[in-house]
Length: 169
Ligand code: ROI
Image 1 (cartoon, rainbow, N blue to C red):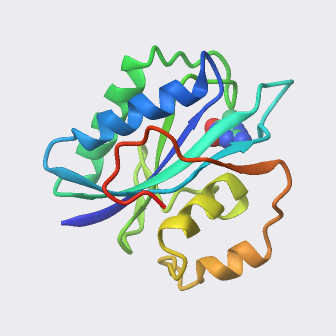
Image 2: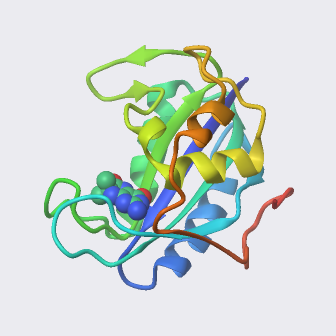
């Protein structure tokens, strides 16, 4: 059984609705249980051009899927949201990122864990801290240390509505 933290992001076609649906779909993943959801956040887009703001959240699941099986399942959910990759780091209906899998370090051509950019992204760090404030990353760095060096700029905590989670925070 692996603890998997998954980042959710959307900035197209009613992002809040995509996040709500994705949470329901994550709750139905095979061999897995949804354990906790962060609050939702509105966040200024990181990336090229003038993109709409994102809605971001993080969930924690327990899973018996292998890392690549989990990745396949997440990509299938993204496809159900008509995810189209128009441009690198461009706007998207739904992005599901594997952030952490226990203390595993994975460098595979399809999957890198921990997520390579998570430490620089406030829209990942703050929701993670909602779920597990005392989290230590596989490299030994406490999440609290990353948060202390992370700006709150462009990030707004929203009310958590409609999430299908046993433990909303
Ligand atoms: N920017 C924000 N604010 N939130 C995201 O989820 C997000 N996802 C991305 C890129 C395009 C890097 N920018 C983002 O993949």
